Amino acid sequence: MTRSYHSPRRARDAADTRRDILRAAAELFSANGYARVTVADIAKRAGVAQQTVYSSAGSKSEILHKVVGESIARADSSATITKIREADGLATALTLLARGTRLGNEGEQQVIDVLFGAFPVHEDGAALWEQSTSEYRRALKDVAEHLQDKGLLNMSVEKAADVLWFCFGFGAWRTLVRECGWSWDDAERWLAQQAVTIFTH
Image 1 (cartoon, rainbow, N blue to C red):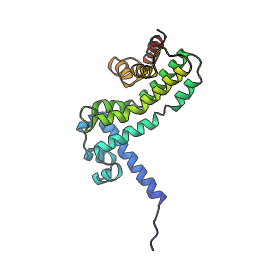
Image 2: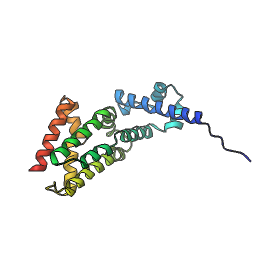
Image 3: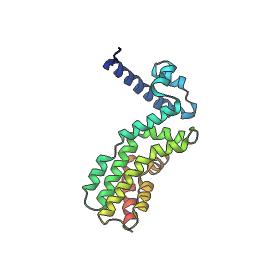
């Protein structure tokens, strides 16, 4: 009769290796573009064997999905939604939403840049887009439903959720900050103002 052996140290080492691989991949994807990075490149940057990359984190495509998944987990929207539910008035709620989405986009800018570079060349760009946006859009719909419950909407929840994505989704922040050179502060203020205008007219 054999007994399974569990080593906490071995588990920690495996987790550390996986973390190093994902960090190395994110850095390389950001610097060189997803298409130009190989598993061998990731292994070299992480200081591990190529087979270790496959066994710990998977293929290049799987690694990118894991990088995105960890980014989504870090950009938890629950704190922002809680504040919005406690807010009085439309302007306050949308200002809080501008702040929360700004912090998420600013904090995860490297991964978002990687995503925009990877979508056209990824093996399954549609699945990658769905993974990277579904939770974000679900949170915005939660906000729209809250605004409806408070009697603050002049449109359907579905349309309001789409408008919130237009105002505060990846594209809005990327256009103003990355493409137009705005500061995050200026973009936050302007997007909040535009959202208030849209929802009050």
